[in-house]
Image (cartoon, rainbow, N blue to C red; front, side, top):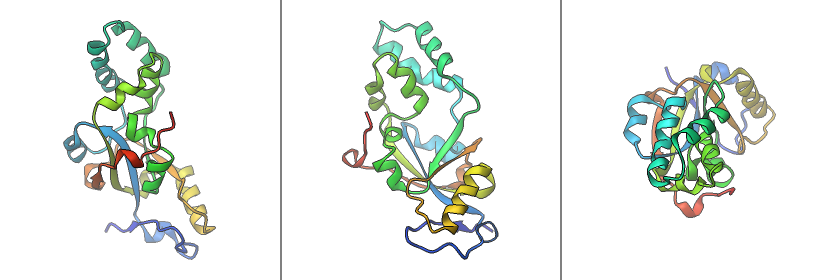
Amino acid sequence: MKNVLVYKKGEDYSNIDILKNFTHIRAFHGCRTSDLDSYYTHGIKPLTKERSYEQLQYILKIKPFITEDQISTKLNEIWTEPKRVWFTITKEELLYRSGHYLLYGSELLNAVLSQFYLRDELKKNGIPTIFVCDVPLYDIGKDFLNSIIENLDKRKSLDQSAFMILGKLSAENIISHEHPDYKKIYDPY
């Protein structure tokens, strides 16, 4: 049975055995998407090199002075394995401190296009989206999970907490989504 820890600031979790009482934690994933249906069908998946390259192809159409080789070279320079899916414990973290995920999307695509001074082109595709998710505790990296539990035990705020999973979050664990108002999103650039 699914039992979800929904973090509430100020609530006392110090006397609760998180691993015994909960199977999932409510978390938020920020992105910029033009295909909501794919998330509800396939889940939230780590970016692949092939998909990254496909997403960068539109730049070649609108900026003919950039070549396919240049895009490929920059992508290969920046690419690291393995890719992960990142989440925050609070929606506010995405809105007020990590808004670049909502405004520009993938950090990888952001890094590639920044090399060509084209970061703002990312704002023209998709729409800022926050997915509300129930992430299985067993999918969270051990160090991240231990940090979350330790902070809850010590009654520390999780307002700026983020964690990652390797692999995808299944579609059944996506609860809902929203498109936040641009005016509320912090832009670090």
